[in-house]
Image (tube, rainbow, N blue to C red; front, side, top):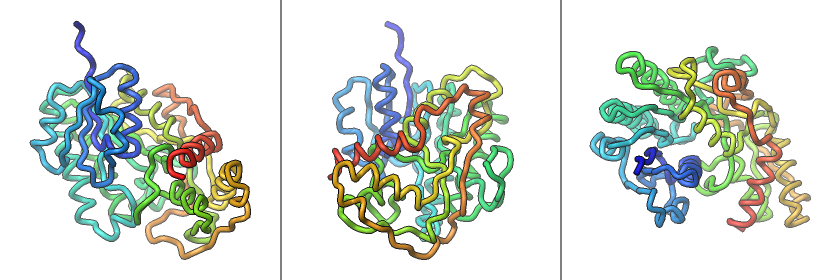
Length: 325
């Protein structure tokens, strides 16, 4: 029998990681999920546990031996494990640094020693920092505005150095405000879309930081899955040892986001349309506007976003209503 391709997904019990596990299991790959469940959830991978092609390793990327065990015999790595959230990194920079930099380096070393074919990792739009250039293009960045942003930029530097020094084929994907099914609405560091959805479903006013005119390039999970798959299997040598914006290439303000959420949720409960947001102070470390150019991904990877913001949001709202109401 022909050996199945083996993909390791770190952070595989998390929001993005579990969606990647699901996608590649459906395509018949062997998938190893490495997760310590600090931000991931057992429920996200529960349906995979009976799949003969799925293996769960509960462990921490801060432990090199755990990383080496996870990647043994692997062909590819999708490195999603990280401590996200700008506010979390401001409150606890030490742990953010340990997970996002030490853990990342451990995975690179393990990947090098296991001679994996490709190391695709979750980078971040936070790397653009204080750059006011719009749209964001990959080779123009500013200074980081948070400890989290520093860690994600250091990841890019390490990946580039490991590529040049050890020949590991790396590709970084700078995620722009990813949203979709399984994104956790709970906790102090919940992302804005699931947090607002839950508040609206409970009949509460969503709390917007600032005046609501800050804008983001909200990116649906299906577009992120597509970018990971393209990065894993591209045969374009120009696509290696570099980073790509992973986004839609569109801007939505927080005020517009709330209006769209109300519209889609009102299909299930008409009273939601009457809820008004409340406004609070801006968050420290937040950039005012984020808009990606996806031209590089289009040219080098053949990326065409499958979901606009509106299409993705409608699907996400349907999932939240059916699964979390």
